[in-house]
Image (cartoon, helix red, strand yellow):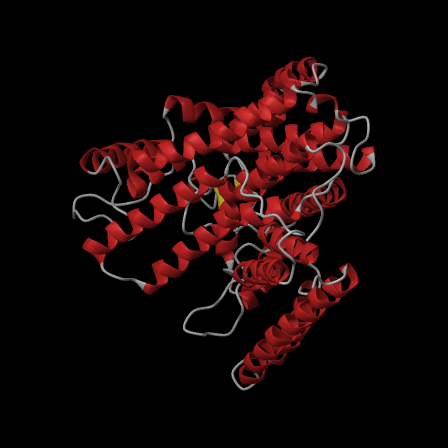
Length: 486
């Protein structure tokens, strides 16, 4: 006998409450044990976090917000209790999200829930399988390293977030809310980056050092400078620790938000959208991340060519003004140094690229895995997503990634030409997602954070964006009606 709709909803709610209570009991025991070993302030903060976690566990959309909010605003925060390691806030948020998703899937009737594997499902699974295969290969020369296993599992979980997105964000209303939340969180991150940049250095150090309670770095090291020269130019960090990582984050945030400036029905008040894009662009510039600057430029070009042609003269005038005004000359010089290979950072990267090509030439097919190089005269690590991926997963892994993203962009283009470009809601979202991803992939030529064991939040956001783009494509294919909500 089939359960009635109301009975199924009740069953879902009961299971969600039970999962939340179970998680709450476990965390409460951890906090209780921590009282004897840590400060009362941490325990109080933990209680508030526990309460927030229970609220999040009652609604899967709140779970999405938790993952996105942590990835954008507190990407390196960890619980201050040693369990053999310190689980990050992102670990807990992702585990809670997957737990809620599986709970809802298992309590629905077969005819009521249809798992969406989507046109990207097979390529993504193939990419993840190749990553696991390369990881196993790496164990043959490096053995089992638990810390690396955990970090590798975080990357797999980050990629798998794609499947949660496409199976949860199945209505226009939910897609709108999630996109709106990303824009707001990105604006907050950009504003923090700007404020911390212009505050007196001592005050910025004191404020950012407060995050030491959640395992962030503290002291003068929280400030970052070009070439690590404290007498040189300061770089914005916000709460992302590394300026280049913050630059990559701003590509995603600004790329998604920029089309809303020209949308006939923006997701937020137009004054807020203008302010958000301006803050994100300024924050990106203040990171002095040349790869991020180039990536965002590519994002804007795509947005202009795909739909908003009136952006083209704005870009041209803006580029001319940016190039010639006195206040940006240090930035322009820093940018030109990269193309000339004249500064230390660029020369170090060129050296890394040579070393990477040497390692790849020795292990071209499946790479050396994620546990280090088997040869004493080589090492794994380079400031390029594609070279790092080739080191770890070989040329096969790079090809799998590029094919996956090629399939995404091809389907996005087909949907765009089939009428999605005329959809006042979906077109700026899909265009923003596509522009952000293309900008991130461009920056990936000279930066590595979108596929790196040290930056699971960047990987998570990348694949969340892929999932949101596919959701927009599927919603257009299904018409104005979503496929239902979990």
